[in-house]
Image (tube, rainbow, N blue to C red; front, side):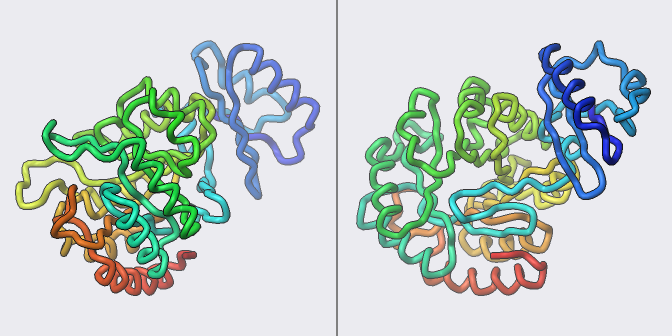
Length: 336
């Protein structure tokens, strides 16, 4: 349920109403706009009557939200959310690129790639330390050592780091990671989502391999219900009947998500198809359709990469792409 306050509503009456709602076990989300202040009620509102609120002299209108996602709902929070990582902003017109290798392989590799992507304009460094792989015999990542190497690259370059968590028992290892990524396979790992809701870090939540947009938003809701509002949604391709590409990028998910939620949305064009030459056209499409950023895999030696080399750009290719992305972002009036 959302309550729209009248302009110049009596502050004492508003506070009294909020205290009463909190005493009933409800959470409130207050969004102050230029014309209206909206109070979103989160929790079991089944016993509340919208007409009772409408009769209050401080309430302009009261409406129920029919969608199952509440905190993530744009009706609850009309203005775009901006997720901040230091002085870097994502969302509400701010566009940023996250880049780096699929997997951290060595100190030399991650530092070299970090320096290269920074020169080209990437603002955040990605790198996998824990790798969920289809085959148990494939490279699983350097694990805790991978996090250590990412932190070394961060210290050298100043780039904030993004890395994927797979197990809630590993959360202490991510204390110095700037954005914690929840991968597609863990999108509905609800115990993990609940734990991340209790941490004070931005979460990059990837859409699952075969999950709907509503299911993605419900996973975001799990995190937000725990108190963490700093969520970045990521469309990374979904499983379809098509076999020419690794996945099928649901480019239409971006405007749909923008309609439904206030959370920022980024595109991962690398995992979307698994083909490096397709990264550029999909990146351009992402900018044009309104995404708030890109997450691109870059490797200094893709042919010999231990993981996903076929979808990785080399530093020269990434630099050329960034020049085009910057021009498109300017046309779309994005801030990079």
